[in-house]
Image (cartoon, rainbow, N blue to C red):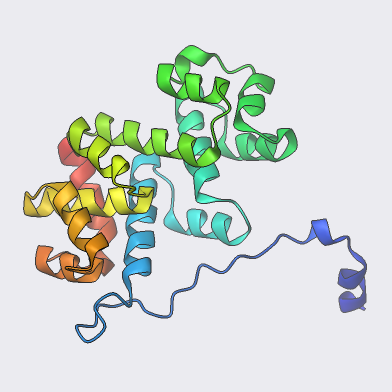
Amino acid sequence: MILLLMASLPALAIPTITCHCFSERSYDPARPAAADQYFLAMAQNAFFAGVFAVDKKTIIIKKQTGTSADDLWVAYRIAAESGVAAEELLQARTARGSWGETVASLSIPAKVLGAEFSSALHARLPDARLAEIVVNELFAEYRLLAASDVAALRKSGATNQELILAGIIARRTKTQAPRIYGEAKSGVRSWGALLQEARIEPAEMSKEVSALLKIRR
């Protein structure tokens, strides 16, 4: 009976599940890049949880049920600056179709979001670009990398995940982040190998990020 009732529900009533599973979760010298995607995702989740004081499980569940990483960055940033709940923002984003329309519908003043972010919203820039601005601003606020390093990484094509992991390794090793990124992208060293050399255990990533954020702000 329960199965029949579930089968009769509209498709939209059941959230889409997007698996964020990783078969490789540890560094293997024989296959140095095998777990790189896991390390990148872990670094991003740890950084997100640290700056927005949210449990990592909440982030993972939202991603698994269809919320993009870009929307999460934007929603939680706006929530932190405006006081509007992140969940309310995400629901409004789904209903309105864009972040510009979402902010306007909730009457959030542009001045609380900052000049660059507000201009990006007004220009209807893609969600991915909005998320990049959020991460760039967080790096500046926490003084994690020099603005020139962030600009160089973005110019080289670094994603949010890559920027974050390069920044974490750079702070630990006192090495230039663009150099770390360059080694990873060129294949000179995998992200896993770079973490090993920096003596950062993936299982301790949250503690590493937490300590870094406390020191730098």
